[in-house]
Amino acid sequence: MSTEHKIRVLDPTGNPTIAQQGMAPRPESLNGAVVGLLANNKLNAEPLLEAIYDVLSERFELGGRVAVNKGDSGRPAPPEVLDSLASEVDVVLTANGD
Image 1 (tube, helix red, strand yellow):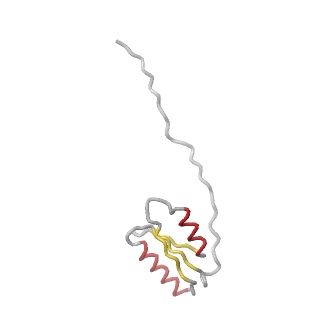
Image 2: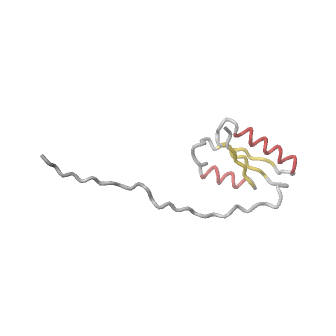
Image 3: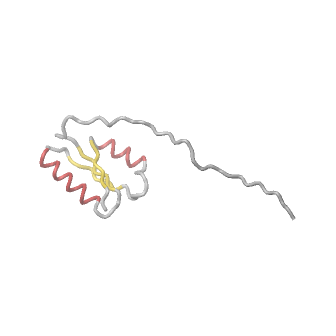
């Protein structure tokens, strides 16, 4: 008994597009700058960011800090978190805290 069956093979690869974006504009100095500290919820992210902020505060007269934890290391920060942070700070530092 012979039965004809067709096998359909799918190719899951696509043509990725990569958007080229330039570097963000850099401030001439951090003097007076409010620094955002964006942690990713990993164990040492917040202490690492605080340590970096402390080093920067020894070198510059910073305008303060805004610390935010995005809450999930496996996902990008929600747009509302980024928008809020961007409206409050001049620069943002982020870190992986493993």
